[in-house]
Length: 577
Image 1: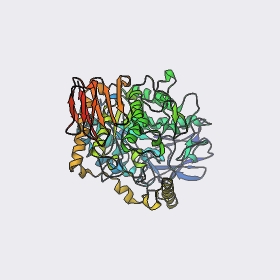
Image 2: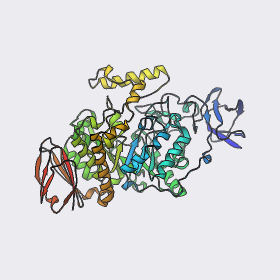
Image 3: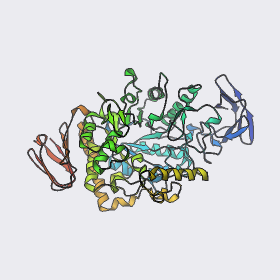
Image 4: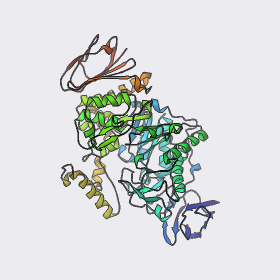
């Protein structure tokens, strides 16, 4: 016998619809409605009607095989046979993360197809696979940040069974798996939560949709809805951690912030399961409170994406200065991030026209995730260009070397390791024509402000936009791709071999640079990284090079003579002593 439950505190009547039956439900004091449904078992479809409206999918639906508007399908998580008993993920400090989008990672765009590419990641040296959101969203194609059935793995990717098989296969190969979750808003199509209860508030606003009610009346059950969701992914799908999207848009004035409550629940689950779990936040606040311990007023999140590192590195390599890149572009800022964690730590931001951030004093570099590419920084460009289309091979190798030798946890975006030429565009598959047209117009209006003609901006709704974004795995056989792949493999292997590259001790990092001559050296214990960003050779005196041996260089012709370094143009070398 299954006790079917749904929270609808303001409803006067709720009914369960399943197997051509309609069962009246009973309300308890907490606003929860329940009914015994002896016919409910794995694979049975059902939905709820509220005050005669609907029926609607279950807000906690585990499976939406017929899309966002269809009936929910019951899942018995005990049916799946896992083979990962005893699995433990490696420490985050020693991680190399690989972000991927299931729909474009392979030509098939499924969990099953992704399993066939896992050995490539193992050979590369990846330790953690990070999946972009998989919660059921509108249509078949999309980034996943407009999910509406937050408990249901996307059917086009393989549904619950396919996702479990992927996670199990990763663990069999020694790969930890992280999942990107979105707790700051829901998508515009198929969002039925307000039919059940006050999940949203008009007290705040987000750029993407109604803000979630984390701190007003009836917010306790709303908070628990999202905490239970996190627990489900970690417990029932065996994920090793979560990446929490845009926490700066999780607006909460409660004495115990939602993020702190979430982190506490995950720590309790970690103890109960006897398995290490991690939480990583995306935040543009530059506020170390996110990753500090609750004992000192923090939220207790394990790590956060380091936007300053990406922006500083990207701006130096590309010379771009539009938008938020206007705050970056100097080697001095890159050096500050490498040695102090953040560039904007309370100083004035011209882009924001105010002071921004606070110092990350005493925080290990392993609490930050650093990258040169990610889905946002590629996909939010008008044409979705990767850095491989913006930079020379020499500058690409410098960027990779700085990512892999910094004190931060390195992350690659799918295909970056071989310099993939395929773009990663913004794509959607809304089945509501008006919504699809609105998304198209909004995208083109956004980039018109930067001087783009509307016809130059790919239509997110066009299936060809999605098709162009699929990785071309055959590219790996091309000469430049083979060299770039070998470079990444060598860097990852070196990071794994030298413990000083994973200690996270930013206070032990020393950076010297010349803004005019465009060179930079970074010393971390016995390791010296020397970069020439200029398009001409450079000769510098470097005391740190004394008694060190070159173990890796991007170009032939890099010469070390005692304390003198001779750089070819746009080159990088790593010395160890």
